[in-house]
Length: 317
Image (cartoon, rainbow, N blue to C red; front, top):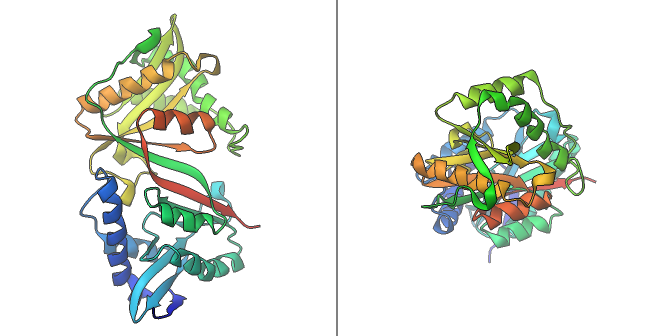
């Protein structure tokens, strides 16, 4: 086969990149048809190329673009000195090309001091994921999807689920701390310290009065032991672009008290959330989780959610 040439990504590659991205997304939609269709693929590429700090590489074989990789910086200290390969940030005809493209692009990123690299990769393409793994990336986060079930058992095992009310605010704020507190521990080691602010309390009160969302609490023997939030996917900052179904419910938050895990409260909350999604006409429901959160990474797939995208991460050194 003709040798592949790797060169810096430029404006002239945008059209070919859009074609490759469409091919990649169509392959993924053949497995997960709930993902969005009819996207403006060129617009997705142009949006990345218009960012202030972005760069990448293009693979050319016999005069044709056969792969591209675009990375950009997020101005958010949470992610360190970062570069992100966003949902539309790469597509290749041959998965192995990702390694060649990254080798060229990452040299510039590292030279600029950007040594924390993130890549959003279709979970349905095992060969592509494997190519990233062989670049020393590992899985940090996952997005999941399922067709909203036609029926659910809302309150199994004696847990009572109901819509939250204003009087639940103190119990809910305590539960809001449980997920970040859990994720500061091994093996997640999240650096984000648990906290509750006045804005969090205001948001809780706004959510219970918002007809477009549903905030549920679970009670066992009259004590609030869990919480779950359902919103339209348009309110998610993570499920965007190629990862945002045209119409979906987003399970935005769920947590239970540690002493109540295994009681059925989490299952009861999830079933209530899925019932709400069904009643409001959402054909699919999405969620996301940290893969190093052992509880979440086992719970959500067991509830029927299939991985759609993986956030891969590499820190240098």
